[in-house]
Length: 432
Ligand code: PXG
View (cartoon, rainbow, N blue to C red):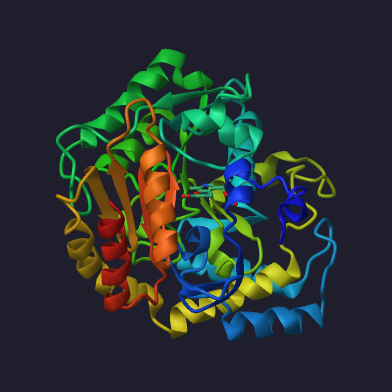
């Protein structure tokens, strides 16, 4: 593929000029490996983009998708339904914490962000508190690329180009000095949640609709919450009638050795966003899991029964092929015991990843489940350069490691062996 053959595609979140000079083309995959156009096998150290924990090209998903394409390839999402959409929704609410008992389908994490926050604002309006509109996010949060998502997100580079967004404010992040190289949950810092109380007081609770947080921030480099922090956040939301939205686009369906972070940390949000791993990445699908009393409020206030209670949705909400892929992916997680596998091997991964402490240029390592973030010391004035250099060196060695900001990220496939853990961690160490 010559340079001229690569010009037309404006690649997302990509250094296009650099990439097109030194392309990294993936043409196939199997299990935990990619195969490049020059025939190299590359270990998939981020499970795609946190999507493909069960490994690539699962026959069960391929067969379910093929069967669905030959049965019902598409049906209208509005005012009509198909059986799999209802089946999958029942299955999701059975897996989720008990009070999350309704499902709204989207196609992506960004659409989940917009959907959950739109529902939050509309909910307060429907129950007679229409001034509750502000959404609180967090510094270092990532919720996608839509207008809502960049407004509530807290990664400066993703915000700076766009000007005015949707009404929001932000809490600080939880990466505090003293917690470097913590294994799993930091034991100090729960009180950082109290900042939320100050922000709600600043704007007055009568103006605040919801808080949206990733229980473990992914894109910013796997920022693990201090023990007790999320519980404290839940209490503050309850005290001030503010809805709590968990963005579990990365954490749901096994990444942290449980079905959801909400279950793992025993904190139930009012809405919970999922995407990515729900179909093992094979077909786009997202979903917002929603508490019954929110759903009920819309049903009770919409007037005549033929009225649409929530004028929101996407052409591909509940796409039959995506639902089929999700059913097959959930089957795989259950039948192969992959979530139990992640839980069982997490301590081993934790030990191994922290063996990198002391390698040159590492200023912090964080981990939970099969996720880890490594912060690297910046070159003067160039904080993002070193992670890129290390990740590209790993690529040359046969390992895909994600880089972003001043961090490297690992999101191992759930099928990763101990030997593969060693080899990807060694590749990072050697590259440093
Ligand atoms: N929420 C979270 C927590 C995410 O991680 C989104 C929302 C947006 O999803 P969509 O499907 O609209 O892209 C994400 C996406 C990384 C990385 O390097 C993470 C994402 C995307 C690309 C890279 O960690 N997460």
